[in-house]
Length: 137
Image (cartoon, rainbow, N blue to C red; front, side, top):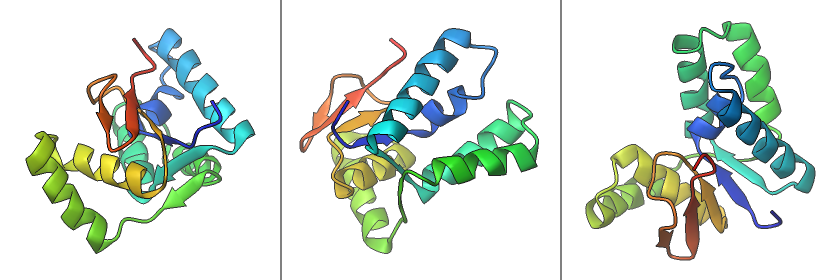
């Protein structure tokens, strides 16, 4: 996995999901490989979504979620800019993605990733050199 890889929120969330042990193991493996190979990329959007999801759905204590965000923050973290938001609107219109998924795709492209790990988008689809991979299939 030497290519820069963008990690969608669901990959990070599954690292905490003991109710889905197979997905948890796969997500933890991806995170560990991206960490050791220094190829992982997330955005500020992903970190925010992670916090909200694990504290609400998985009832992870906020302090523990914050510590985990600090660990994920060791990846390359891209901040969302106005240009990204406007381009995401175009991707939303062009590809019929939800706006939030279009924003993920936009930042993955802008950050130079060739792989986007996501459970939410169509696996195998390619957009401008970015391959969407569902690691949980």
